[in-house]
Image (cartoon, rainbow, N blue to C red):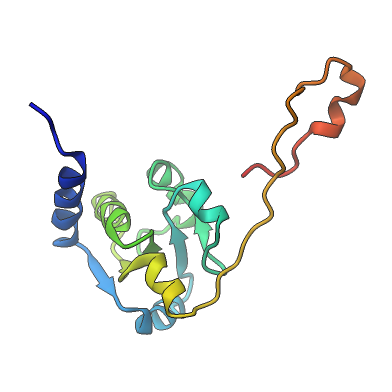
Length: 151
């Protein structure tokens, strides 16, 4: 018997949406104007590197529960989440609420809506790929390959 994982994911996201708050793009500025508000991108690293909202913090869905307290130590911190279309951010919002966060909203339509509306998009510098001969056999050259910023 085969499981359709896409259908299962969509059902999970739809269920999470019943317990979370979604706001339209028109309300994002107001949400971010709250003192201490955090805009968090929960997409994967490659999506983030391809472009993200200015001022956003990147905490992908796989790590946010471990690292959220570093960025939002108070449970009433205003948190505005976005992903690609709003499904992954619904799952994250649901989990954050289960952790006690009580001021979490999702951007309706996610980054796709953000970009389509012509809102600003920024790109971070990404560390260059390592050369095929890394690590170098001449270890005196190894400093040339040290990355200062990981993707």
